[in-house]
Length: 419
Image (cartoon, rainbow, N blue to C red; front, side, top):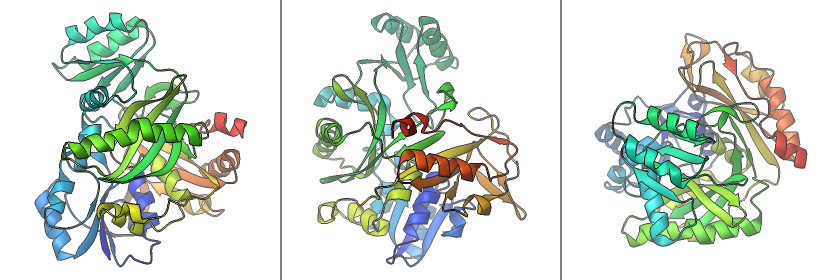
């Protein structure tokens, strides 16, 4: 089978690495890809925003499955257009992708169906947003409504911080946003496959959003992650599936917009039980890296069954009992303007003891690998527990020569101390 993988980040490198291991695969194509993905796939010179060009390529190369990695093409309706020519797609259509494309849409769905989540208001103006603050006391969360690459959220701990965030949000005119109460408790990410009707859990993880050690500084797309999320016990996972995920899938199906793909539920484990923080309509990045490092099944078989509505025929997902942990190496300036062009060496040395270096924001300058984005590498390792995986991952990080890069030194530190 020929497969087209859409995307160019560390998540897509992890998917390419795993897809390439399947005996069902003939040729894996990737667009636009990156130098790491090119180790496993044939890079297709495609503008994925040009849906007609993608469809022509799918037909010409006799693609049997399209896997869409990032959220933007999903929100843009690429999956719908490919399904219209009869080709299976792993990824939700435009309407279902609104779960990530519009935070207000998701909050309204939660309110309508009774899904536990934070109390909220939808706002469209600065004055309206400021007027909502009295309802939340000193702490609240301010979220831009649309896609923001994991960086459109401000967790305000004082009234001054909240007002400053609102001023920044509305500095260039009216936008849609959500203001909600701040929930308390540990966070966890639950991944669930859905073929529109059936659902199946597909692992858990915990990520680290803040840019600096000790969870300091602004939010990022993720500076590291580990799997499994120990705080998400089997009882809490089943509650999250029953109270949050399955009602969401059922509501979308009832609306005639079935959800096909992986649904990433960001959860807060409060004293009252799991509550939804947000949905993402794709594998997380860098959560995908640790999930793929642990997944022991045939990824082609799994994603194709989801795309063809046969999820119920598959056995439960098989994950290694070992833990996995990934450390993101980012370019100086991230999450602001990253410094591009910095040289990267030592990947072979980093991988010599079994670690995997997934590439994200990279490019080739002649024969030299260089930084070409904010988050550049995701250095991933496994071990019998999170502490061992953490030790192995940081040993690999220390073998990489990336002078214009930086990383957090505390990924998984709390969890490894609890092992």
